[in-house]
Amino acid sequence: MVVKIEVFTSPTCPYCPMAIEVADEAKKELKDAIEIEKIDIMVDREKAIEYGLMAVPAIAINGVLRFVGAPSKEELMEVIKEELK
Image (cartoon, rainbow, N blue to C red; front, side, top):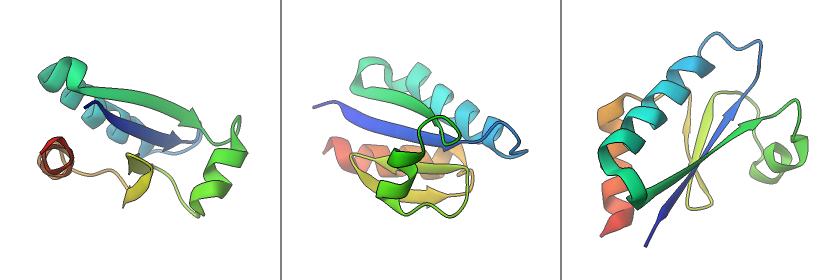
């Protein structure tokens, strides 16, 4: 099973690059076990509305919003590993 990670960002957000970096680090470690989609809410507002997002960065895992704000790599990895079980 592949874990799908959606990282919601905005070009003006000062914290969004950190969320992207953490997701990219997880991808380097877990390789094909995860799939990352980076979503700019200025381009794809519908997806952000679906999740009821009020702030970015935000990370959804397998269709469930799990983080608002940039998580640490450890926090993200813990949730991903739960999903992989």
